[in-house]
Each structure stands twice: as structure tokens, then as C-alpha cells.
Picture 1: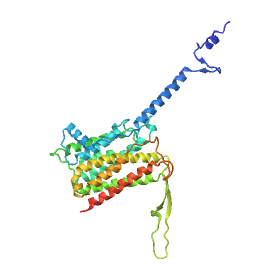
Picture 2: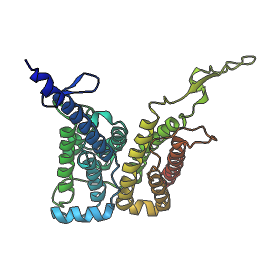
Picture 3: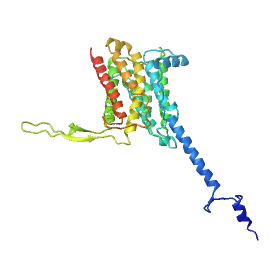
Picture 4: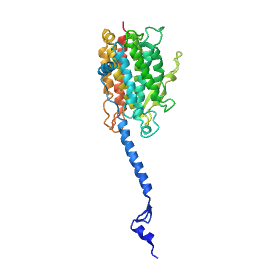
Length: 351
């Protein structure tokens, strides 16, 4: 009797195609492997697109367009609040949306963009607190604005919450309360206020300087440095007492270097826009204190920190080595911006 099954197998007509080594290839398994490979390729391309940082937007032009669209009047403080809204909205509406709380590919694989988002969120939180605490109050004993008192806690919600509630929903609610405050601010008959005083601006700049100072230290620690620990040094008690100073080596983990770098870029991106808005709403104060040039210098340093990174990864060469150290370059711009903020605060504190 003829073995028709073996003959058909040699002709390639059987259910499993025969290979030269005698094994068979399962078409279903091959199809699954090809689908997984295609999915990973698409996820890689989508992740690359989602990792692109948003472009800067023209602050005054955006404010005029937003006021025309909502038929509102641009008053003192309008530019600052509208810019804060736009900066916060960029976190949610940029390509890929908000990625910090993603639990599925490709968002769960990305870490640079979530670090950038956190840097932006830090500046959004600081300014929303300044609005509630200082800008919208005439004095320390005055009542907080009801909308700002609700917006500020929403922006301080956990940035990695996936559901019940999701971070995005809380931040959108915060933007809605900012929008309500903005609508009342532009209405002369409403009771919303914005006080563009030097002391209010100085308080917020103090928070900004603290943030930038911490960032510059974390960026500089990419190469590791031995620092003196002043907290462990005892006070000199009298004659014959020798001061003991402890040394510690501070170095950012190589797995965290790119995270710190992109967090700094996020803070610089947000802060450059917010300062352009401050330049408009506090124009009289800055002119009176001869401080307008200082604000522009800070903005220039922050925008320089956002120049495109042409390297496919954040390099961490030694200070004078062959390879670049992008963290040290970023630390230079952040430190110069922080120094300019210190000078600006000194000008604002003068009578």
C-alpha cells in the first residue's frame, strides 16, 4: 500500500511543512511570533514619538488667543494664570498624553518623558501654591480664593496614580478651577484679585531658587564628588578643641542620571514660560526695581537648557574626559539661572 501521507508531506501538502532536518514548522506559532515582533516594532516607534519634548509656545500670543476665544478681558494676572493653565494642559494633551502612570507598553517602558513631566509638575505645583498663598491675597489675614484653594491640592495629587482616581482626572479638575478663577478675575464685578507686589514675587522666586539649587547639585553629582558634611561637624567649644569634619562621597546612580537630566529640562521648560508671564503681569514692579533685565537673563539661561540633545542617550563622561557629560552642561545653565534669581530677589527686596 502506498504511503500517501509521506508522499504529500514531501510535496509540502500536509498540515505542517517539513524542514530539512526532519522537524516541522507550525504556521500558527510562526504567525504569533511575527505578530509579536510587529507589535514590538510599532511600540518602539510610538515610544520614540511619545518621548519627544513639546515645543515652546509664545506666551503673549497664546494669552491673546485664549482671551478672544473665551471673550474675556486681559487684566493684571490674566497672563500668569492662563500660562499656568497651558503649561499644566500640555502635560495631558501632548503626544501620548500623560505617561507617568501608564501600565501598558510603550508608556511603561519610558522613563525620560515621565521625568520631564514630573519636572513640569513641580513648577505647576509651586506656582499654584503661590497663587493661593500670596498672589490672590492682599495680606496674611485675608481669605483664600475659593477656586485656588481647591486647585492647589488637586495638582499635588499622586503623579503615578492609574485609577480611582487617575492623575489626569485630578489635574484636569485643577485646570477647571483655575479657569473659574480666571473668569472671575477678568470680570470687574467679581471678587477675584491678583496682587502683583514685589514681596509676593519674591516669595515665589525663593521657592524657584530652592528647586534650581537642588537640581544643580543633583546634576553635578553625576560624576561623583567628595563633599564636607557640615551637619556632622561639632561646634568649637573652646580653646584646644579640634574641629572634626566628616567627608562623604555624593554620586547620582548611573540608572538615575538620565531621569535627573530630563527632570531638569522639564522644570526649565515650565519655568521659562511662567517667567515670561510674570514679566508681563509684574512689569511695573520690575521696571521700578530695575529688574527687567534680570528676568530676561534667567529666561535666556533656561531656554538654553532646552536645546535639542543630539546624542541618542545622556552621556556621563568625566569632567575633562573624552566623552561629554550632559548633566554638567545642564548644571551650568541651571546654576547660572539660580544665580540670576538670587540677584533678582536682592533687587526686589530693596526699597
